[in-house]
Amino acid sequence: MNKGFVVVASRKNNFYIYAINLIESIKDFYPEAHVTLVTEERFIDGREDIADNIIFCDDHYRAKLWGMSQSPYDVTMYVDADMECEHEDIMTVWDNLGDNDMVFHELTEERSKYYTIRHFDIENKEKEGWFSLCGGVCLYRSSNPLVKEFMNEWYELYDLQHSNLWRPDCFTNDEQWNGLKKFDQTTLWYMVNTMEKYKDLKIGFFHDDIRWNYFTQYQYENLKSIENKPVILRHYSGCLEKDKALV
Image: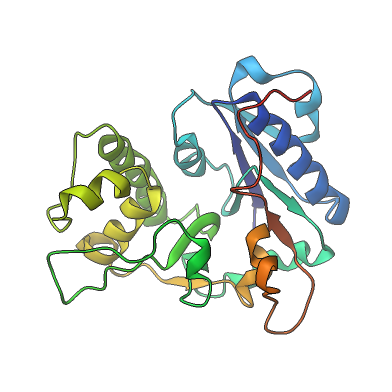
């Protein structure tokens, strides 16, 4: 089966630099890995040759969602650009899919202090107002037409949400919505939990998932893999000066 990684870098040149570093680190531990870089044409400087495939995007705030929908692979591992691969177990990533359609890192209660938001108010009290799926990494069957539709709609709905052109009726707290609308996790939660056409998608979590999206903040309390194994992908979200110029 055709399998590969997708990395997206848009808006800031720094994200392009981080993306190149990420791709190099993946290939250090997994030389056979096939990686597609989705980026803006203005960033191209020769270093993109480390990628096996290039797709050009615009400078949308969440071009990552558009990039996920453009995957050329049957099975795709999306990885945020501000991450780095640290272990050869990256080669086992495909084993995590099982019979699932999509696999995520889990936002758990134990780790909730490191998230911007996890709980929120919704109108329908039968549904939990909790974020549980983290989009920093996502393994998915991109050849599945319903998954492809999901990825396309995730981008389209988020674009409307972020532009104040769409707001799901279940989000009734005006003050809270002003914060929620900036998160693609809000759109993800809505689609997974309320949209009937996606109810049959099988969604799971990475085995020992902290290894696959280890936020640097986790080390503050020495959070470790349940099997005490090394980090595979370290995530520098929240600790990089992403707006400053790098060379």
